Length: 65
Image 1 (cartoon, rainbow, N blue to C red):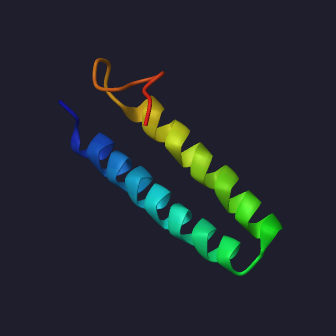
Image 2 (image 1 turned 180 degrees about the vertical axis):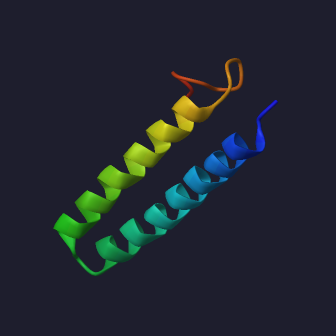
Image 3 (image 1 turned 30 degrees about the vertical axis):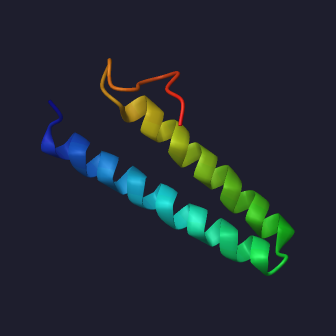
């Protein structure tokens, strides 16, 4: 069971992943290659944080999306 702080952290990571994904699509569509690349790196970092934040047995490290 997640504590409230952990739940808030997970919600924040999920939100960041979603927003970064949308920002990357916007940057790609405008041809902002370097910006899209940097946003993609942040998106990957948020995904990795999400994986590390998962409780054991619920898609922790090594989980595939």
